[in-house]
Image (cartoon, rainbow, N blue to C red; front, top):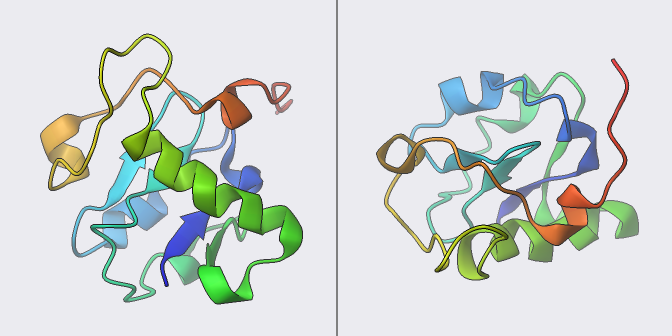
Length: 114
């Protein structure tokens, strides 16, 4: 089991979840934040901090949210547009820094108006 970040985070990237994550497993893409499934310790600290309730634990995800489980993993293990290799498990978001790319699922979503 792991936590995932679903569509409500797209174009928001509030980052309060990043501030409370004790293992630095929440990474920043161009339009959305992603939780690394191999680095997440499932502590749940991030979930109550999300202002749009985009963070859910895998077994409680609705069908609409569940698609983001594979998408969060794809951010790390698939080659993203404009990159030559997968991000993998770098050992913390601060090590990698922001990534100017998203998964195709997120990149293809229409921009969210403010």
